[in-house]
Image 1 (cartoon, rainbow, N blue to C red):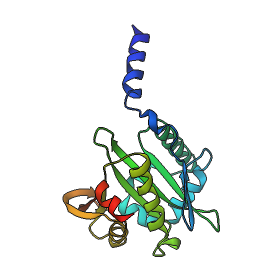
Image 2 (image 1 turned 90 degrees about the vertical axis):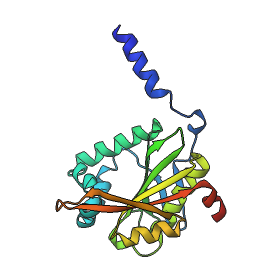
Image 3 (image 1 turned 180 degrees about the vertical axis):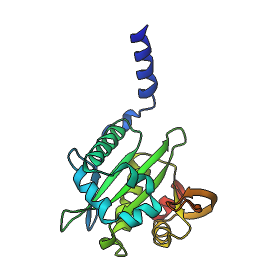
Length: 209
């Protein structure tokens, strides 16, 4: 009875996997970056990135800061994301600067609904590399990956109302404002904040390339 239950659970978890996605790219090259899947033992690099940008991340992504309090916690987090990638549950990319080989950002496809299919997109770049267009090119590479390799029909972004740099990046990549989400984000101060919902559909993406 126990083994039957285990088999049943395994079948349920593995059934949504898409066989055609077993050989997708794990690294994407842009002019100034390498955007790739994380590897084991890169938790310390992620920890350093988060610590260097602690105040900004606390404002917009407090859950990420909470998860990654130590180097060991970051390593566990990365290994979970590697497993989720292999199970086709989500796709987290690190962004490495070509010149310094330094981890400078993250682009993340998550909350994937394969039956549609669509996904939420999130991104973040080190403060020293911001406002240079680097994250725009890295994010657009992941957007291409999502539409062309994962065969997504739509991507969406939720951004804080006062996160103007994120909104500018989203618009450069073709996203449009679709509406507002009232009291959708809890700030570290305890204040409930509205969020802007932005979306990009496959047809609009194809019109850009």
